[in-house]
Image (cartoon, rainbow, N blue to C red; front, side, top):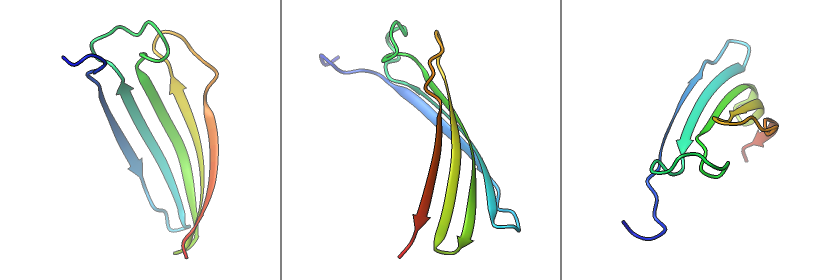
Length: 92
């Protein structure tokens, strides 16, 4: 093992569905372990679990408005680090 190296693991899964009203609900789950060899004694090494609940609205083929709520679940303690994100994407 090289000094400073780490074994890490993670995955994500996402579900989305396009409705006839140009709305697209989304649910995404992510899990990431930055170092599988060590116990989570700090927030840096803790298992990261994030669930995203979101909705996209498509104005047309070139413009999308996204609204997401990210619930971040800590394994050993709970921090106030959840997020609400909004993004407007325009293609030129």
